[in-house]
Amino acid sequence: MKHDQPQFSIIGDVSVDLVLGTLDGWPKVGTEQLLPRSELRAGGSAANSALAARHLGLSPRLIGAIGDDDLAQWLLLQLAGIRVELQTCASDTTMSVGLMHADGERTFFTSCGHLQHLTPAFVLAHLPQAAAGSIALFTAPFLLPDLRSQFSQLLAEASARGYQVALDTGWPPEGWTPQVHQEVESWLRHCDHLLVNELEVMSIAGNQDLELAVQRVASLLKPGANLIVKLGAAGALGHVDGKSVHFATEVTAEIFDTVGAGDSFNTGYLAARLNQANLHDALAAGCRTAAAILPRFPRKSIAAGELSHCLQP
Image 1 (cartoon, rainbow, N blue to C red):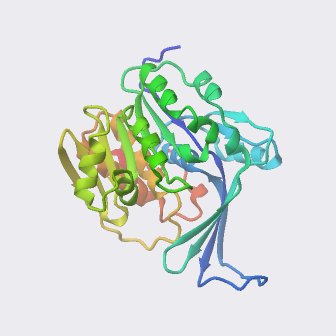
Image 2 (image 1 turned 180 degrees about the horizontal axis):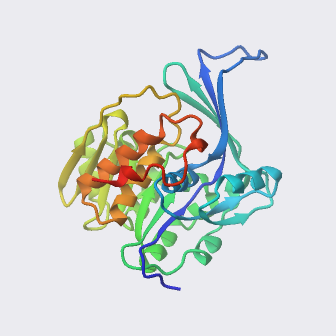
């Protein structure tokens, strides 16, 4: 079925996050630590992006997977108000424990769980033909081995169905080997929006000079595609048709929990693009969305539509 209005579909990792902090130093094995803050919530890049869209007042389609345990049913409750298409896998639900350190760094422990089993066939069965201007955001292919094995074909099919293809690669667990470089380059030729952080763009390019890395990676994208580099507290950089735009931010709030910062930015940026915003205004919307979400703890206290002002130019 073809829709008249542009659609926002998000395809990728959906799991459970337990965020704890703040940890000062690393404890001795066999001891116990009391931490003052914690939150159990829906996690994974795709779920974080979909929740950010709900915060903005949007109704995205979320395509992913869940396990077949009690935690999966709890996870579904956290995604209320989002159109979910989740493959039930004969597995425990994937969980990540995120430890926030006093110096601002984070440590994650993640179980394999159901993310090992999301199939391309399920994704394609639930990704409808799209109206003009629709966007499909793909996240965390390195964590989804069945999708990864056919990922280039999956992106090509999404494009054929009328979507602008957006991709956040994430980080390969095996590192940026020659094989990974070749694999990722086969993905990039299908991308209309590549959303990566500073370290990722330099790693893809094999060049530690940011400007040269941007030029190299941009040359691997389809003509007219947008390369977006997330710079953390420094804002974001956008590059298209040989020209770069930088949007700078000012961090005014102390942030305990930075989990999902890039995912929140992705959603703000892409939501603005759905509304026909130009590159500068879309970068600004991405930065505003992340800045509005990150200081909130617990995150699940943000009401649907509460952050819709982030999309205003």
